Length: 138
Length: 144
Image (tube, rainbow over all chains, first blue to last red; front, side, top):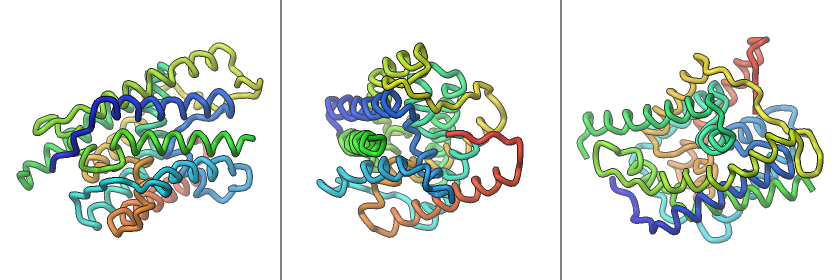
C-alpha cells in the first residue's frame, strides 16, 4: 500500500511541533516526552502522583477530537494488529522507549543508547515490511 | 501548572503527528518500505523534531534543572544492553506489521474503529504484562 503524498512543509512543520512539545515538557516540567513511558505509567496503579501523564494524553488526542484524525488506512487484519500492538507494548517497555522517547528525545539528548535503540527498531521494521512483501507481494 | 503544561505539550505533539501524516499507518509503512515504493517524508519529520528539541536538551544538560529550577526526571542508564536491543527488535516487528507506534496508536483510538481498538488493546496488554514482569524482577531498573 502506498501512503499519501505529504507536502514537505507538512513533514517539517509536523516534526517541529513534536520537537517543540518535547522541548516544553523538558524545560518546564523536567519530563521526557516518551509516549510509551507516559502510556505505561498511566496504566500503573500509583496513578495519583502521575496526573501529568493523563493531562498529556488528553492533550495528545485533543487535536484529533477537534479536527478529526484524517485518513487512517489500515493494511492488516484486527488480529494481526492486536499481535502487533502486543509486540509494540512489550518491546517499548523492555527497551524503555519508542519512536518519541528514543527516536526524538534520546537523539536530541545525543544519547548513544537511544541511537542504538532507534537504529535497531527502524532496521527491524524495514526488514519486517520487506518480509511481508515476500509473503504477500504488494 | 504542571498539568496545564503537559496538556499543551500533548496537544502540540498530537497536532504534529496529524500534520506530518504519521497517524496514517499507510504513510508509516511507505516510509519503512525502503526496498519497495519508499516515501522518505517521515525522515524529515524525525529530523525536524530532533532539531527543535535539541536546544532544550542542551540547556537542561548544562543546568541539570528545569527553567523553574526543579529537578529533571531523565533516564540515567547509558548502557547499550540486551534488553534495549531485544525490546527495540520486538517493537520493530510490531511497528513493521502495523505501521503504528505508541503516539499514533493513542491518537487513532479517537476513530473508535475495530483496527484501532485492536492495536490499542494489544498495546495496553503488552505494557501491563511488561510492567508486572519488571515488578517481579527486583533490581531490574525501570525508567521513564
